[in-house]
Image (cartoon, rainbow, N blue to C red; front, top):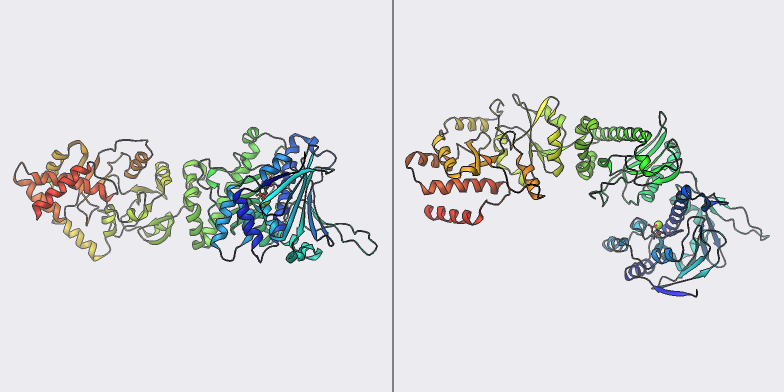
Length: 628
Ligand code: ADP
Ligand code: MG
């Protein structure tokens, strides 16, 4: 086959323009990217060789070799990894613009300083080679195949592919350094870069010795530690090295919020090096709830999706788990049922939750940030993981009417009022709306704190967990409000109590409203929870709670809402006046309209629409007309 010429896809070309055209302070990261690709290629082949050992026959020692040619001004990065065939080359280096290209260009665009170092995290790290080179040549041969290929580009819109010769499998990348990038054909500079960025690479990275006076080449020098970082003792690893590894292995670019590195010896031996990110990964809410912790068996990569290694509610974790006690050529299905894996899993869960507790106790502010990122995911465990429920509940944080910050249940309990027996909560969809809910009025007046829960998952775990520390968890939108025993501690609340005492008896009004609304309400009764609004709706004891019903209707799992209990505020002027009218004559149009309007008003205050918007508008107009 003769030489073929291809154009880069538009997106790649745009990326290359940016990469090649500007000056960056951190250009040296190109080497990290190319070494990372070489390492990935070795990992892939080692993994494939588990099932096809012949692929690495005769050459099982993976390595990455660097060489500098001072005359030609080239830097060469060579690996004996999986290599690429013609199709692979086309698919990966040039034509297929991964979604990462656009995302990276966007990320760069916002930042004046143009931080190139993120490029690898967007899956386009290879192109960083064009920051420093005006020509890149890739000679590659796929493991198990005979043909080799040469890919060449100057990064200016086109690349070529032609047949080539390569004696062994693997990939060689030759960078022809730009005039202003001569620093990268210097041994000590290259050595320094590798030690800085690539020390964690688990294959040896060597640099061929410079030719001496006699033309004789010195032996290549190994530049990195060349052992998997997690196998080393934690005390020998710097924070910077952990971070480099986290970025490399998780394709992340934030700081790890917590690093959890342990060697466990016991019934099952394993090592974990786990990271909790400080930022939300973009796929956190993927419906598949996949784990992103890589499983290794004796330092050989097995899978990134080991079902059963970690529960889905810890899917924000990144990093690796390595165990010599699992079988190397185990299939994924068998892995799932391996009791050793279950052991590892329960050990990991305990460890991670323990670390979280430590963080929560030590630095509440930092923990609040974690909670903001991942609390919504961790809470899934309250439903999923029965055994860990208590531990998870301790770690759970809540917004509340007590103030701006977050509270734990334990702290809530400490603040409970004399005579208060339950832990009160209000669930809803939106924080603003929830905090304005009329249901809160009576609680606020008595100074009783209410937890405000606005994540959809809250409704679900509240089905399973009904008490904490011997105190019932009680929704303030369901059942009667039992605030009578709670001692008010301020004068205003006392006044409200007095006001309630001379409130009218509502029997006639209640009878009239029931008659008018019929099936639309389950019951009508005087309210203990309202102090300012005239009316609200609550779920009857034992009925589906208000917000749960809302969720089910929104997701189409329920069509008709249940009739609710309507509560009237006996101290409200509207209710008082209506109550006076109710005794008087039998057929009162205004009273009938008012009954419907009160119901609709209660719905609106919950963010719902009136049952019949047209009728609502008509009634409102008619009542206003009469009032004017
Ligand atoms: P990423 O490494 O995130 O996939 P890159 O732009 O760095 O993105 O590399 C693109 C792809 O090119 C890789 O996914 C891989 O398929 C291929 N590739 C790059 N370098 C090598 C190599 N040395 N050996 C085999 N394949 C490689
Ligand atoms: Mg890469």
